[in-house]
Image (cartoon, rainbow, N blue to C red; front, side, top):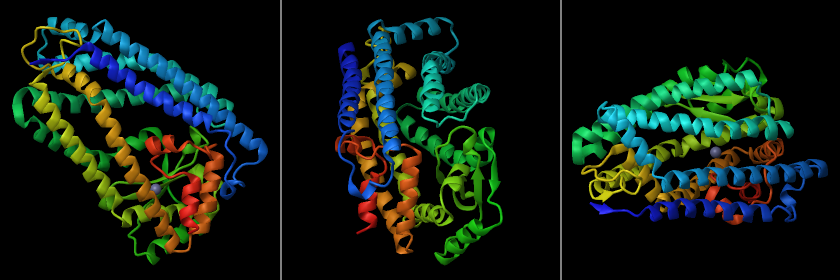
Length: 412
Ligand SMILES: [Zn+2]
C-alpha cells in the first residue's frame, strides 16, 4: 500500500482553515461599504449600527473557534492520537465492528465536551446580547442531552450497518452502503416530522382564520395538493424566523415558525409560501436528492477503491496493519478529500442559488413579488442579516442569493 505523509494531512487541515479565514477577513473588510439603495430601508441607523456590531462579534467568534479547533486537530495528528486510540481499543479484543463504534463513540464524546463551551457562549452571551436568545439554561441542557442521545442511537445504527458491510462485502461495499443510505434517507423523511421534531418542538395545525383561508385559496389556484399546514413554536428558542416544507407524498407538510407569523403580514407569509411551492413545482427537492445520492455514491466508490491501495493508518499513528481499518480510513480520507469537498460545495451552492431565483420567479408569476420583497426585508432586519457581504464569501458560502440580488431579479 502507498504511504501517505502526515504532513499532507496537516497541510490540508491548515489549507482548509486558512481558506475560511481569508474569506472571513474579506467579508468583515466589506462591512463599511455603502448600503445599496434597494435595501436602504431595511435598517434604521440605530439598527444598522447593531447589525454591524453583530457581524463583527460573530465573525471574531467564529475565527477564534476555528483557531482552537484547527489547533486541536493538528495536535491530534502530530501526536498520532487517532492511531493510539485505535491501538488501545483493538487491545480490548471486541472485534472489528464494535471497535469502530467505540472509536467514534469516544470521538463524539470528546468533541461534544470541547464544543460545549462554544455553544454556551454563542447562545447565552452573543445571541443573548443581540436579543435573539429565548432558550432557558434548563431547556438548553435538555436539548443537548436529547440531541446527543439521538446521534448515539441513529448514528450508532447507521455506523454499525456501514462498518459491518465494509468488513464483509469487499469491492461491492460502496453499492450496498449507498443502498443503506438511500433507505435511511426515506425512513428519516417519514419519521422526521412525526418523531424527531416533536422531541424538540410543538407543532399544531394552523388555526382557522384569514391566513389559513389565504394559503389554501392560493394552493388551489396553483393546483398544489396542500393538506397539512403546521405552526411550530420556534419562539421558545430564538426570535429568528423561518418556514419550510418536509416529507414526501402523503407526508408532505408546510411548517411555519410562530415567529414568522408574528412578524410578517398575511400576504408576506403567503409570498414566502408561494416561494416554497415554487421549489416543489420546479422539482428542486428531487434534484437535490439525486445530486446528494450521486455525490455520496462517488465518495463511497472512491473510498472503497482507495482504502485498499493507500495506507492512511500509519500517518495517523497506527503502523503495521496489512488491511484497511475502517475508522482510520474514514478519518484519513475525510481529510484527503478537503479540496474535493470545497469544489463540490461551490457547485452545489451555485446550483442552490439558481433554484432560489427560480422559486422567487414562481412567486412573481402570481404577482406576489412586492410582498416577497417586503417579507424578505423584514426577515433580514429581524435576523440582522449582512447587506454587503463580500462577493467571494457569497460565492463560496451562500446557498441563497443576497437580498440585493433577489430584489434585483424580482424587480426585473
Ligand atoms: Zn427557497
